[in-house]
Amino acid sequence: MTALPIPNVTLSNGTEIPQLGLGVFLVEPGETERIVSDALEAGYRHIDTASYYRNEAEVGRALASSGIDRDEIFVTTKLWNTDQPRPREAFEESLDRLGLDRVDLYLIHWPQPERGEALGAWRSLIGIAESGRASAVGVSNFEIEHLAELIDATGVVPAVNQIELHPLHQRRELAAFCREQGIAVEAWGPLSQGKSDLLERPEVVAAAGAHGKTPAQVVLRWHVQQQRIVFPKTARRERLLENADVFDFALSDAEMAAIDALDEQLGFGPDPRAFNAR
Ligand code: NAD
Image (cartoon, rainbow, N blue to C red; front, side, top):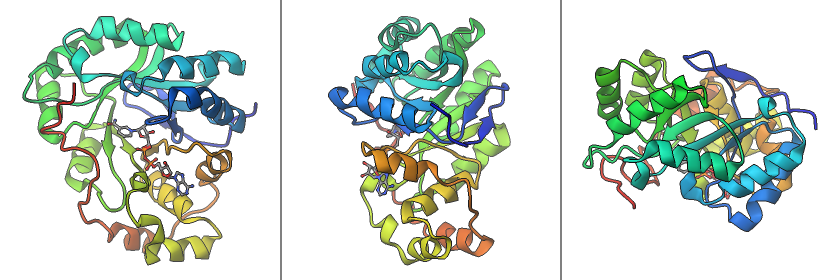
């Protein structure tokens, strides 16, 4: 049960988060416990879930049966859209399902700007952090104007913004704003969710060949070399190890620049300014 050699990133409030973890979006509840158990066994210590993923209970069971100290595992979950008017209750329900008395990171999942509920939810998350039951609080899928609203109204800067980000969709302006504000960027869909030919692009394949790594490892290395936090999803044991094995090589400036040049502003997720799934 030895942890993998994955470095921590220090969030603005001092909380340490393993830079690489496992995401469990679209992992069937029936599969989740096995995958999370495999990941913990392989040395992962950071799990990203959400109430929307309907697998918090299975994540919690894997955590409980792992025998690993709670303090050694970083758990993130998220407040779903319909729960923005009732954040405290929804947070308690997530804790119950996870079987935990605190999480490490709690995020507002989407801004839903036309509903105007995110600011109230953010005030509640600040209270949850003050109570110590979330080590850090932040947001997901927030654009600059959504972040600015929270910061201007409360003076409390989210610790992280979890956004779709990969070489084909680099979100440069938003990432720069986050950097200026001290908001750590978590890249969801770091491999573009398997929805593109990213892993076959010559720039990625060439770097993989040069370092004796796989294209997925090159893309993950491109993220971590920019201090981003990632949690690529896989249901396959061999890929768990492959995806975490990105801390023993470095892409050159030229290799980084070649991947930087792949930006097509091609996102696969919904537009955060309009997304309002219930
Ligand atoms: P991802 O980019 O991690 O892609 C996952 C897919 O990539 C897998 O299904 C598999 O097909 C492929 N893959 C994984 N490892 C590979 C490898 N080594 N070689 C080749 N292909 C490989 O996309 P994701 O799962 O959507 O994103 C990761 C996590 O981000 C999610 O599980 C979830 O925790 C989080 N997420 C958050 C939001 C949000 O709105 N906050 C949205 C989507 C995902």
